Amino acid sequence: MQRLTVNGVAIDDTFAEAFGMRATAIIITASNRKWARQAAITMTGFATSVIGCGCEAAIDVELSGSETPDGRPGCRVMIFAVSTDELQKQLQNRLGQCVLTSPGSACFAGLKGTADLKLGAALRYFGDGWQVSKKFGGRHFWRVPVMDGEFLCEATTGLTKEAVGGGNLLLVASSSAKALAAAEAAVAAIEKVPGAIMPFPGGVVRSGSKIGGKYKGMIASTNDAFAPTLRGVTKSELGPDDNAVLEIVIDGETSDAVAAAMRAGIGAVTALGPDKGASRISAGNYGGKLGKFHYHLKDLLP
Amino acid sequence: MKPLTFTLRETPPERLDLSSLTPEGLAGLPAREMGGIKLGMSKRGLTVGDLFRVSGSDVQNIVFEGGNSRFDGIGSGMTEGSIRVAGDAGAQVGRKMRGGQLLVEGSTGPHAGSCMRGGRLEILGNAGDHLGGPLAGELAGMNGGLLIVRGRAGAYAADRMRRGVAAVLKGCGDYAGARMIAGTLVVTGGVGRLPGYLMRRGSILLDRMPEELSPSFVACGAPDSVFAGVFDRYLVAEGILKRPLLGAAPGKFGGDNAVAGTGEILYRR
Image (cartoon, rainbow over all chains, first blue to last red; front, side, top):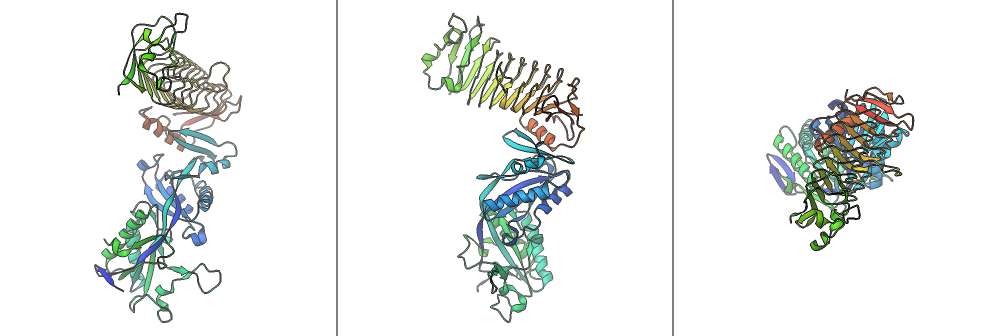
């Protein structure tokens, strides 16, 4: 395989293969940053992969008081799913169990899209008849009485069908500590890219997967080609000095957001260099036949 | 294109019904026929030509140069475009309007914005009684849109209001928000006796604690209200107020418990 090198970090001539998804975004606010983050983190917990969680979700950006509809600190949370129905179901459940319940929270639309998903329009029934509808300035809100006052929630948020899920980078290093350092650098850079989230723990996946497996019913199984302990028994992608691989998975509001996030990640990993971080960057694909979106690493160099 | 301008020649001798002079009412009408439109309310049969000098041709942008308290029904049922009245207006300005912009630079008579459903009606002077309210026999008053009175409003402001936002900036008379069904009434500068009398639902937002309430209202403390913060920002962004109205934790009275009792009077503490 032809090797490109940036600052001593080899870049594979390959591409990340990603899929079209449905996505939405909401803005969660609270009386301070701590509780806005808490509501957002709780809502996006257990939302790493659509394979087992129904959706993929994470905080996109944190917002200061001047950027939110109510002047309080907040977070923009993005949620991705494979169908509109599943997205609505996940949104409603997570909003009801995690945001409505969080002290002092309020929730607003975070996306203008082609169609609407219900927020307050679904949760209002919690008000048991004492919920209040308010329409002003072209927006519709529901006020639901709760024990610390009122939960204010916009009636709907937008849905986009332009979203992309599954952009990725594989960071190959000589030790797990270096792989983690490279992954952390990539995550820090990608967090600054608007409209892109990394749904896995801290943005990092250590158990990258391939499609299917030898056992019946397994949708995905371990990515043996990148598992260092299996170099002797499988068609490995790893060289003799590669001892750890970590993956960054990226979902974006648009294809451009995914590309920008991957570019930012590659930039951070190559800036760190092979002595402190990854010696090689690769990407995961399925031969290019399954996903509509292909991101060639050579097009995304810093 | 220049705005279609009706310049008043002299004080009209009788009340006039100007409800036909709206963007949709005049659309496609040849200029020579405009002078023949009947406006008078008596057997005199006054027409546009008798009262106004007409200039300009843009019917989406109508101007009354010089107003009068005898100008009734300006902008009735308008759905688009804009009307500006450089002067006073009579009764029922913007009645049943559904869209567009209507600006009265002077003061208006009773029933301004009566039963309006959409659009923006702004009155720089004072408004008479029954702001946004229904005529006798109608079940609901203001039903949407934005109604702003920069001056003072008379009694029964937002009577039987059902939807939308009405704001009165220099105080209003007795029974503000009486029989409200829903919607939002903002009053700065003080209200008269018994605001929210027999209101079923809806919000009356005040810059101070009301002095005389019906005993069927109940104090509900002053919990933190995100709604108050969002609405304050809306009022400032829309140019209705310069400063926030309610603050983060306004006081609340719930009522009117003589009827459904799910309405609220929120006030800055």
